[in-house]
Image (tube, rainbow, N blue to C red):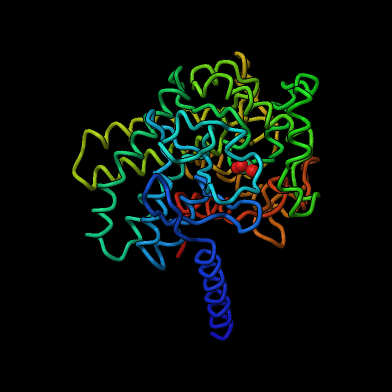
Length: 404
Ligand code: DGY
């Protein structure tokens, strides 16, 4: 009993701390003549609005202040381009320290009038967050009104992704930049990034990166990506900018093109979430369409299982390649979210998760297996624990194991 009370007290304290951070990182900004409330990931380097971070914040906020959760989604959708694209960053014009800022992306011809954005996307978590908000909202009438107002935009984003990132109709979307994968600095991107020869990165770009990197001015350098990685990140941004942010061209010419397990598991889960929303709103035709997309992706994800490695593997598909990426990262558990793990595969994933030499550490599951040669307990996404990926683990496992 006493242990239970102590654990509960600790939980309440953590919850309060999380709320304090969420509230202190959120404020109102002007976008195209209207005030929107949004949360920034940090008050240091990440001082703008990020797509999947905001979808996550909304899921936290629904438990304490539903209106704030809805505002988070409204504000993230205010960055939507005409073609349905949702950018990974919406910039706050008043905050000028972050690199690469709007001048590097130069998307103002394509983004909504008066809204400055990046030109790449991030894991499509926003669809899932809508269903999560519905399930956890205390006032169902209020959340239904909210859903009706945002669903057309989220649906447009899904239609955009399907059209441009899966033009071959494989069920798996392609990401064209490591930042699109969300796990920015994961070992998963090491091999595909080598397709970009450092000698091909113009000196002008290298100098720009080296003189402007804002992340290195703030934190510990050992936590951040290496210089060669940043040169390649900005090489890709420059390449896409030269296509005038034309999605077809971007996917075709990008030396970095990956079918990522985590991104696609979220895609599957979000399509299922949209189907649930439409079903609840009595729109069976729409529900069927997104259920169909979820099914297609689930099947395709199953094909990413390597019997030999007992891992779900990303695939490098740049310039017609079809090369599995052999890395052991937290992403291998993501198909649990998509219900794409068979009952035969489940025990080996659980064994991996509960192995102290891999993921069962003193902290919640790390982002890269401890016994991977790429594990680095300080450098982000190469080891350090991340709350959202642990949420995915717990949520995904609930699809298979019913907790008492
Ligand atoms: C960064 O780390 O600055 C990227 O924008 C990641 O999203």
